[in-house]
Length: 517
Image (cartoon, rainbow, N blue to C red; front, top):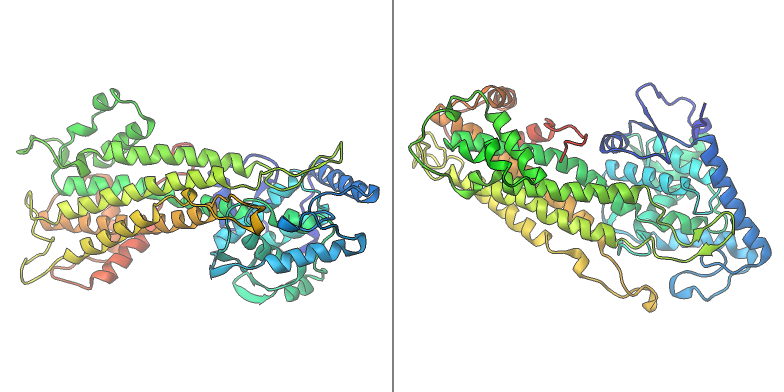
């Protein structure tokens, strides 16, 4: 049976519901979802543990031989030419963590920190970072105990790795700063004391191994991908509800149409729309109008292109999560410590910027559909009010959606197009991938809100017009109305919007398998 890293540290943890994940194996989006929720058991196999130990031994041999290796016995960044005496190597690593914990802004959510811990454990387990197995055990222990370091969301340039966020993550290993331990904030030193375990004393190279890497960008990108899978599904569902409430045309979604332009996402969306609309009497009668506005007619092309973009982004994340992003890279057989550039976040930064644009489009076209069903066309009352004029209906919901769409346009500006000199010119090109990641996460949150607004409007439009949305959407509508009942007149719009958002967020419509995008 494989050894579990950190098992002896947490004897009382209930592991019955945990899903075992080998640190060095490929993980799917479903696996990452379990990790984000704290429902995974991170496992280091005996053979992988031996590789980590052998890699550490290579570092020790290099120190014994007097070889000068960046970050092992030199300063960092622009201080790389400063030699460090052997008796100062531990202080060098500790000082690195303490001094680099210079993040800013609000704290990362627990899901992001769990993903950071697991991503860092995977990176160290690939045995090119020169750390002791015991340090890897300690990282896994924080995850397994759900003792989550406080990590500010801002402060990483996305090159030299995510230095500030990872330094904050690493403080807890030293017994510094605070952790959120199963919902309770406490000093990290207290957490280790309660376990009966001493905090880590970092050896040569280990501090650098902890803070070099792209694990913050990875974590925010992964939690964004998990949200994007549900946003994609809800875009199709809410869009179909609006289409039917608007008495839209079925012909643009026929299979014979989409085989002529076989983009994968486009075909998937057309199929989804047909599936959601199946059984609706609105789908099978001759319409008095001959075509619909683009925001309805072009859902497969627009939603589908966003899905195709996200399929690429998930591929980048999968490659990155299985990569060594440390520096220097330690090669066990030769003992070489090679300074390279795997910490540079450009592959992620470009992918996230692409994802920002793609995700914002789900919101942009959704807001246009909201606007269309507000205009008093095709038997729908102005602003979906029961008594237009006396009542304003959902007029201002469209305003709110438009404001979020405009905010997303600003956030969709490419972060990777920017760079800034740092560390006295030694680090003279950076990716800004962390900014791209946090912008992406905000964009997706805004899109989810916009889609929740569309869902609210589409439901009310169907009720005001008496139009049947078909078995699947009517069942979904019934579930929603169980949480927020329909009313006949004007009502507190914000409360309804928040109820719709809560329903959308709590109602996943997509699996996380290969069909997610």
